[in-house]
Length: 238
Length: 229
Length: 49
Image (tube, rainbow over all chains, first blue to last red):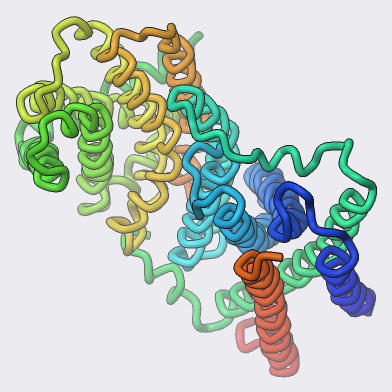
């Protein structure tokens, strides 16, 4: 029941934050209307990164304790993270076209890093899908989750240096949107969106976790009943 | 100290065994090298006959050829064993998992270096890239890049080797992970060819070395888990 | 006000909020199905000793 209240709260909050950032906040003087996309972009990015941090921590937790709950948390983080990462990239492209003049700017470290991030965690979900036996799946996925987490900062730095080398085009920098000197309404819109997204994110994480637990139990029950061997035998060499 | 020597001796045995198998069968090495050469040729067709453009793209094409063939090489090193169930037996021996990992990574590194030794002269011939002044530096970059690729490639090959879709999954998992390695190696190679006018080369080499170290450490710690399950 | 700018804002909000909503609904549906399966499993006595 608590998650139902949370879900309703999340819907109301996201609707409210969207209305506020679309109709209440004035358009930015420099960037005009597209600046409104930044609220969505930044909020998506924050929760994408948070999800992947949780996946990395839960992956280590699984390898140390072999706790099925850790595997469920890792899966929830990766799947929800992929949804928010894809949102981040979409918002970045929709903002980049009118403001920078291009959908994609190879010189922007955040956009490029996020693209690699999306590929890394789609790979994580794929190796999960292709492994049938739950314990094996959790272990393989945990290794992939940890390697991906190690990779993220390296990707980020390499892309920043890369830009220095190529003297990227001097378009507007999205960092300036977060400038603390911005009028209070802009800050309020961003905070509202972050708050609304935190509710939505938490709801999605809880639901995905619950689903993962149910799926694990179902697989466990199948294995313990007469149908055993099917899952284990479907992999060559097991 | 004892575990360190044990790890290294296990690594030596595994690498020697793979090397023997390669020398006896030889298909893997020849086919991988052939793939690298064909890739270079295809890049030439894709970028057209403009020699200036090919020279500019040279460093990137060099590394793409190395990485694409490298995926094949690290995969092959594991397929050899799963095809007859020897991988499971390997897991049953009371020997260090880290040693097995290091041995496999060593084999992967050797394959990568052979590929590099072929692809570098091919870049010079096909793309008219002048490397005469930068050979020692290029060898260092190829070595650093190969170590990092072998480190993470071996780990992922071990993780995916028993999956039905391993041929698709290995490159799919590996390519995004080696994205920073590719970026650093291509940048370092391009800088070496240009004479490094801004002194940016050390930063890239450090990034490569750090990547190598991090992946070797992660691989050494986690590779055994793929064997045990 | 630039009309094409507004199109980008709408497509950003529309696609992202829509995608999250669709994801949420599929989660609800999958959860309901998994819950049903779990309940059925509990009702039937375990065949294995």
